[in-house]
Structure formats: C-alpha cells, structure tokens
Length: 560
Image (cartoon, rainbow, N blue to C red; front, side, top):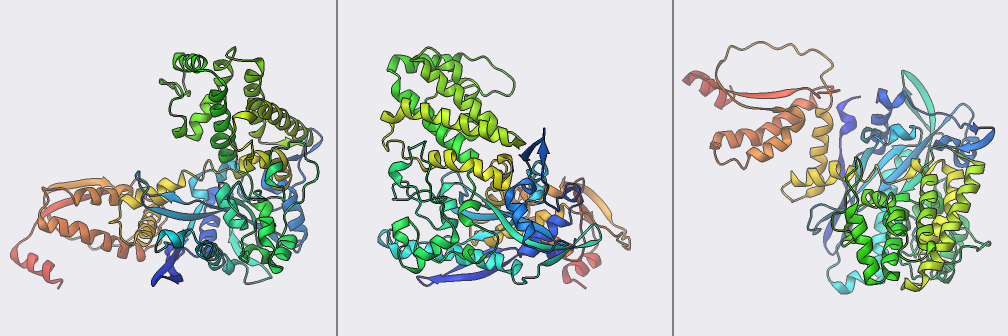
C-alpha cells in the first residue's frame, strides 16, 4: 500500500444562503484498496456464494449464505466475484454539550467474515456529509429546506459512490498477487431508524400515514401482529408514485432517490433493521418504562430495592440507585438489565409480567445466533410473535401512541426475511460501528482548534493512519556528531499528536520550543510523504537538547 491511498480531498456540494458546503472525503476506490491490502483481512475473505447446510437444513450465517448474494452472483459472469459494499453512517455530536455535530459515513465489505469485520481495521472512513444550516427557525421547518437537506444527502452519496459504478464491466483488484475481477454491489446499509429513512427517502415521523420504510403498512396497523397482507416497497412502485407526484400518499419524500439507479439493490430492504436501536435502546427501553407505568409506587420501590440488592458479579453492571435514570442507559446497560429483570419483577404484579421478560430473553438470545437454520427461523418468528402478543396485552393502555411503533412492526414482520436475504443479524448491527465515532469524530475533534473541523479531522486521521505503518526500506543516513546535553521529552509515536497538543499549553515551554512543536507536525507530514509506511506500533520519539557553537547555530537558523 502506498501513501497516496490515504489521501483525502474536499468537494463543494452546495451553496446555500451564500455559504459553501463541502463534503470532505477519501476516494472510495482508495478505501477499498486499503482493505484489500490488509493481509489479516484477506485470510478470511469470501469470494463466492455458499449454499450453507447445517444439520441437513438450509442455513444462513455469513452474508454469502443469503439470497441476496445468490441472486446477485447469478447476474454477473461466472468468472467474476461480488464485492459486497456495506455502508454505515450516523450523525453524532462532537462534544458533551452537543452544540456541534458531524455526519461520518464508513465503508466495509460483506466479503469479510463477520467476526473479522467487527474489528476497527476492517472499516474505512469514507467521509463526512455536509450538515446544512437554516438562516432562521422558519426556514428550518419549511418543506423547501427539508427537501434541500434530502437532495444534498443523496447528491453527496452520488459523488462518493459513483466512481465504483462508472464501468458496467466491473473492476479489477489485486489480491495476494492475483488480479480478481469484481462487480461492486451495495448489499446493506446500517444505521438507526432516522438514518434508514434518509437513505430510503421515506417520512421519518412515526405518525406519518405509512411510517415503515420496508413496506406500505398504515400507522393504525403497526400494532397488528397478525397482519398477513403487506405490500413491500420497491424501486418500481416508489418510482411510479414519484413520477405521478403521489409520493405523499405513501409517505415518500419528493426527491429522486440515488439508489433507484443502482442494480441488484432494493434500498427499502437494504436498510436493514438494527438490533441495538430496535431492541436494546428501543423496545426493551419501552418495556421497562411501561413496567414502571403499570406498577404502583410501592411496587416500583420494591423493584428498585431488588435491583440495588444485586451483589457484584464479574461482567455485570450494578445499578446502585435502581432505575431512576433509565433515559441515560447505554445499550450495554440495557443488556445487563435483561440478565436480571425476570427476577426483579417476579411477584410484583401478575405472572404475565414475569413472562413477558422471559419471552423477551428467549427472543433476544435467538437473535444473537451465528447460524440460523430454517427451523430456527420458524422458532425465532414464533418467539417474536409470542413476546409481541403479550407485550401488547400488558402495556397497550400505557402507551401514549397506542403501540404505534414502527420498530415494533419492523421487527415482527421484516427481520426474518432480512436474515434470509443477508445472513445472521450479527453481520449488520451498529454495535461495533458506534465505537468508530471515538476514533473518527470525538478524539480528533478535541485535537482541533474548532475551525474548519472536518478538514482538520481528516488531516489528523491521515497522520494517524500513516503512523501505524513502518518504513519498508532501510534509510541510509549520514551520521552527524552532536553534543547532547539533556533529554527533554519522550513519547510514543502513536501518541505524538495528543502529546503536542498538551505541550502547547505547557507554561514552562520557551518560545522556541513552542515554535518547534508547531513546526514538528508539518515536518512529520512532509517526512511521511516521502515514505512507504506499514507499521510503527513500537516506535518512540525522543527529543534531546544539544549544544551548538555560533557557526553551527547560524547555519541551522539560516537553513544554509
């Protein structure tokens, strides 16, 4: 891999209210080449569809065992391979106050085994979407501004992704010194519910007439767990509504969807349900809130006492103050509650209350299977329905929306079909992607001066990527005799940028030393530009003070 593959650029995507909006990005082909140059990833690389059998049954595990891969592979020449593209994006705050946000998009490959794809180096930052600002509250709530936001998002996607689809005859990539003929195909898009609606250009509001981006279920039928006639959204029926200006009748935004022109893709199915947002942070959160709603004050106190009394145990979070601040719980903390809530609510009301938590756990455990046989899918669907029926019976009266939850409907009616299309759920959850925000948003943001943030962050990420490589060729240097007087600093190369930012605020530094730290990063960038780098995990930087006579000092300062 050469350094040029780590390069980044920016492109003006829009001018609005006399303000230019840029998309800061890395070329998608470069991102893919970086993934394909990682020897550890290539050890577990998938090339062809596998008709997986487990215990004599058709089974679904990795993405290449699903129907999408099967039918997509059949549409290309037999000597070629599918290059399965997985996209993940999510707007996130840059600081604890939430005053500033960034909207990163990442790319990974479905050809990488799930367990390997969950590692950070199996994903690449593709860029940052521009976030539009309205001039006032009136413009922000206007249909025109909403339309402009949608158009800008899809225009940005087109700019980022089009280079892969310019050639209808596929693209060649070198893998293990062999040229492989690939056809790039978008398989899945991972994100929370609002993000999925942004990709599919359906209304985000749960109170819209047709709030599901998978199908045309009416909002009043979201609670119906037995509905057997569902019209799925697809490119054909949505394009027809768009062309006839009847998109509002099916909760479709009046914007042309970029993905309508991408082959072997149904954007309304590819925006897969995300277990973390659907279950951990979604339906389970509701279940606990509704449980508190149907219990009396004394029973809630008893529930909190039981939670507080749970002894410490390795790997289990202790809720020392009960469930007073459930709104702030993370997905991991919700999963910890799943381990104990069956016992916490036992005997507080009716047997049904304990049973709904038992049924939830049965459903949740099945959702985490690595391999689904057809019989497992039938069992999984039954456990979903059993839990859902009891959930409605117990909590319907406590729901202000009368259980009109799009995620509730989506999980019941679309998750099993998604498994058949794209493999086990573990292959398309946001759990391992959310951690990328720390590396690609929050940490580099704190190292910036808060101006031109995206460009500074891209620069920081570029430096970090280069530091993680090592020099492949021995550098021949002419030794220079120096008189060292003292060692001033020592730090890891990987931590150089954090160290510099800290030292800039050091009141004990002289003016020349501050100047030196400022120039050091520029010199380091220039140095990296000359090298082909692979890894520098164990490298350290030592800065020494040296003694110079007047002639040496003059030569140094005059750059002669």
